[in-house]
Image 1 (tube, helix red, strand yellow):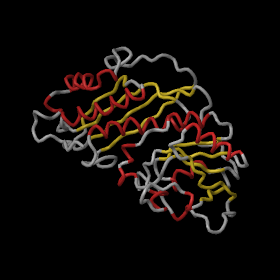
Image 2 (image 1 turned 120 degrees about the vertical axis):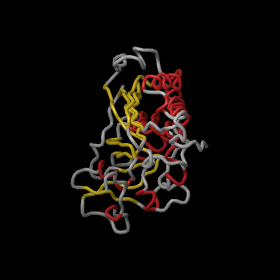
Image 3 (image 1 turned 180 degrees about the horizontal axis):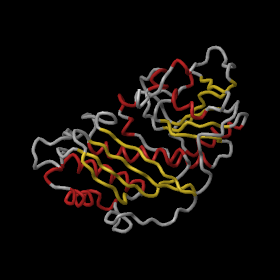
Image 4 (image 1 turned 120 degrees about the horizontal axis):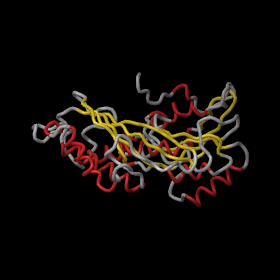
Length: 311
């Protein structure tokens, strides 16, 4: 892991020694094959994209120094995390990513070595998922560093949304939950693009979303009107060492949570999933019940809280 500090101790090693034009030229070089030649990539006022093959998707997410990363995370891992945070949103809609733009707001003291590694981390994920970085912007922000990535995608089939769940539907999550920061999962995760596209093709999946602020908070977005989520504590797929509270509240899991129609078809879903993704758990953690009908002994989510950005 790199120990390169975010801010340079010398002006020669900082972005302030270059100026905007020279910095953009460096960014192009750092991205390499991850950024196409203008007008399909960096170099014009806008990038030119081919028409989407289906409905268009658009998402945006930042990484902010001191909020989404600190010195324990290398610059390359920060760049990778920024890219994958957005890919996870596209996955939740059952879509596939197409192109990205990255806007920087940074102090002039930011280290050139740190920023080069950051962009190489972006480029690695860009090439891995075959999603080009086609543009961006640079602005001055005294005292901090914020990188924001906007990602365009397309939904060739059904678009999954957070609405559509009904009373009696089963609640499923992919992967493991909790202790994302302690385990390093918050930057090492793999966005569930193939899994999200597969789930979107299953007729019984009624609603789905990206799990990033903790199950206790995010699940409210899927819950049908007049209902509440009845969860089984023993069924939560906890990461090693994670408590029930951590699995519900920590956030930055970057998994998928979905509602699947009630009935016996859940067994068929689980068998088909194991054939398609044998190494990734798909766990039924509960179901939606009418408000006031929460069975005794099940988790009451009112006692838990996920991550709140402005609290």
